[in-house]
Length: 380
View (spheres, rainbow, N blue to C red):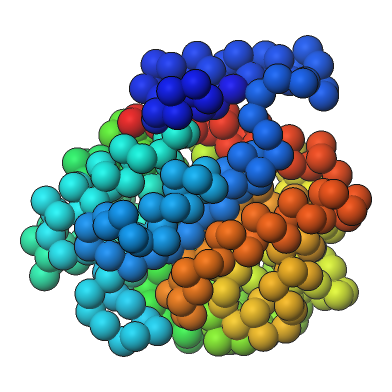
């Protein structure tokens, strides 16, 4: 099991690895073990949330979510969108390091501590906070020198490791097929329109992060680069603009054994699913990604509070559909809207869905095992 139920103290890395190995071995030998973590603990590991605060205060809801609800991870931001405040989680390198350490200290199972540090315009660790400057993925793709990309990524990964992060929501492997795309091309987040360049560049980024013990996330599956709209703001349809070339970087990086996790896009593509956006689509995740591309790693949703999901589906329906589709970790960034009780609500929805048969317990077990397996690879 993944926690010390007697002392109720966070596990050391050594104990966590041993406990994880024991649990996974038990699951392999018995599909329904009686020992091990309970249902709510497993579901808790499937929740990753954003929060407010430069330091951890005992009254902060995130402390309760980590300590009592056993959520699996957190994501840090520099800017608080709902309040339009430049103060959120990041003020300086020393402050971030202290915050991350305090979060890990109260976690029974080591947390994913994630950040969007892509480079360029999407960088949470900015120069004004004392962090080194970064370059955009488009700049690296235009230069198209693997050695240059590797050095840039190595420097970025060292900064993340020093601050205590263990998961970067990068690199973006969307193809830059629409440079006017407001959320990908317009922000210079894509390496190139050529999938070969994107794949080569992304592999350098991933391998550089691994050298510093940082896990990565390929995004946004099955492709957001061709969209004309922004899924943060509402329904985004790529049916007429998407092509299967957008799957190539995922396929090649999976084949290379370098894919830690994949983040879904909230885009609608009628050619893949005539009813649901990718994050909620079993055809897209369990069908295309897992069966068609032989991927059995962790799948992370993009922020479930983005309007492409939140404005089109109720919270309960979206959560159940996403997990039913094959998503392992549900992200609630709490930075388009702020809901301090979102982790409690999401865990309650999933627990109820298992109880009434809408989500099979085996689906929860598979996600928990993937998460546990991935967590054994980062440094705590």
